Image (cartoon, rainbow, N blue to C red; front, side, top):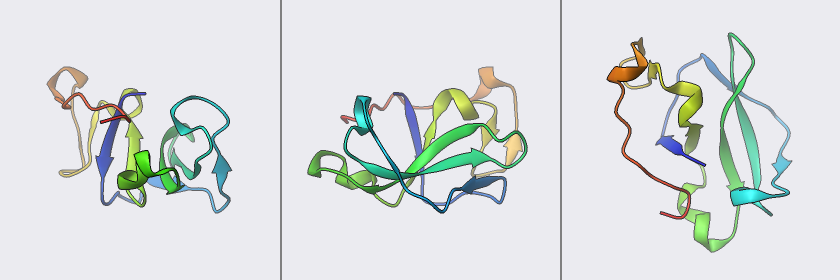
Length: 94
């Protein structure tokens, strides 16, 4: 899973009140809140609530799926061409 991290988001991102449990993949055994786009309703990331020690540093951060936000800059709140967005390569294990 390729992610981007942020300590804050705009009102265009919402999250569910109920916790989900990861049943497979990188979030196996973790509990998290799903982040969604307010406009289209698609899942754009998660907020990790509980995890093992290997993912503890992600708890409380807004973790976005890079392929879901490639045209939106959170800091400047601008929509730009995807080819102009540069995310450093980070994986969950890093």
